[in-house]
Amino acid sequence: MSSPSRNPRRSGNPAVRAGAETPSPARAGLEQRSRGLLVRLAAVPRLVVLLGALGWLLAGLFLPGLVGGILLLALAGALGWLVAVSWPVLSNPQRVLRGLTIVIVVGYAVVRLTT
Image (cartoon, rainbow, N blue to C red; front, side, top):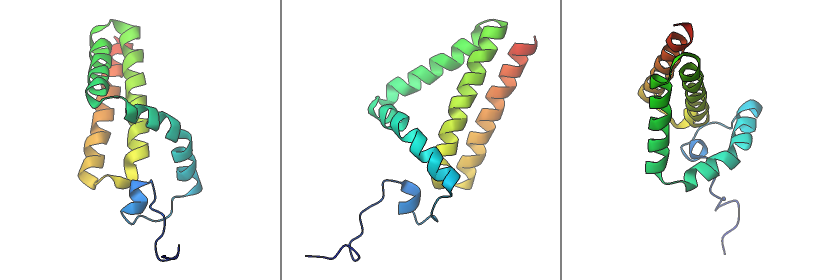
C-alpha cells in the first residue's frame, strides 16, 4: 500500500495540475464561488452552450438600442467571468484573443447604447 505523501490526491484545478503556483486568496475565492455554476455549465452539451451564446450575441446585435446594448454587456460580463476563471491555464495568445473578443463585444454594446 502506498503512503499518501508518495501518491498525492490529484487536484481538480487544471492550473495546479499544470504546475502553477498556489492560487491567491482572491483567486481561490473566485474559484470556490464559481464551482457550482461551472459544474452545471459543464453538464450542458457543448452545442447547446455554443448555440445559446450565439443566440445571445445575435439578439444583442439585432435588437434595438437599449435592449441590445444591455444583452451585449451581459454577454461581455459572462465572457469576462469565463476568462477570469480559466486565466491560469490559458496561453498568452489565448488570453489576447479572449480579451479582444470581450473588448469587441463591449464596443458593440457601447455603440448600441449611445445610438
